[in-house]
Amino acid sequence: MADAFISGGWGVRKTNCWSEKYLANAFKKISTKKIFMALSSDGIPLDINNPENPSVICVVNNPKKDASLSPVIATILHTITKQMSERNRLPSFLLLEEASTIRLLNMHRIPATLRSYNIVCLYVLQDKIQNDMMYGGDKASKAILSNLSYQFFGKANDPETAKYYERFFEIIKNTTHSISKATGLSLEARITKGGEREVPKRRAEIFFRLRQGEFIVFADGKDRKVRFKHPQINRGLPTPLSLTAQDLDNNFIKIHDEVKSMFK
Image 1 (cartoon, one colour):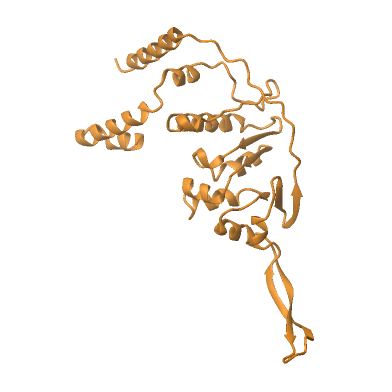
Image 2 (cartoon, one colour):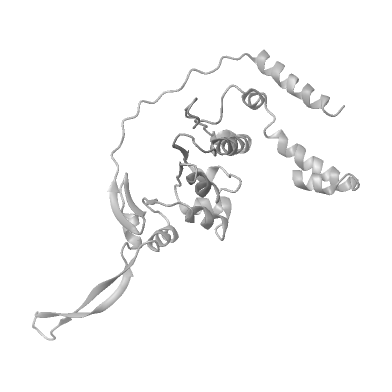
């Protein structure tokens, strides 16, 4: 929308009018006092893999406020990845839990780019279908998943997803057998060895039977089944920053005044 506004130029008044309306509606979603306060200070360094200031930043979404928080979170994550992409930094990681809920710009390039800076990207999905819906199944979603070196396939609930998992594994030859039974009162049966049939090493149906914590891992052309134990995590939250409603109002007005002063 911003591109349409800039590209339209100042000559076509009607085009600019509609662009302004679209931009205004988009900015209304993120123009809240709390978001302004969170983004208005430089108190947290974002180059978190810097040897002088190693740290972990956790950004959490809220499903009730997804429309306003998702673009802000995506902006923060995009900025962090840019700040981390420097040479001679500490080995680090980017963990995207429920990755399909956040749309990142050029996500298909991020894993490969971060890998060159010794940063591992963990892209976690409940189901491949969710990623297809967010990025589109034809090109973008496939490009993202194909850039992930190691794949951990968990329990599948969708047949299409299970078939997608199946295609990762090598084709093996499976010996087939035929059973012939005698006619009449005789109960004798005879098993005869048949031919060979090519089938995937890991069939689609096994992904429906995986239990909690079980995964089929595919890495460097090899695969194996693993089971992770349930970790005992001490959960807690950091001490929140104490701010009054007046602090939020003052900061909100200050930012508006600064923006208005740019156009005088």
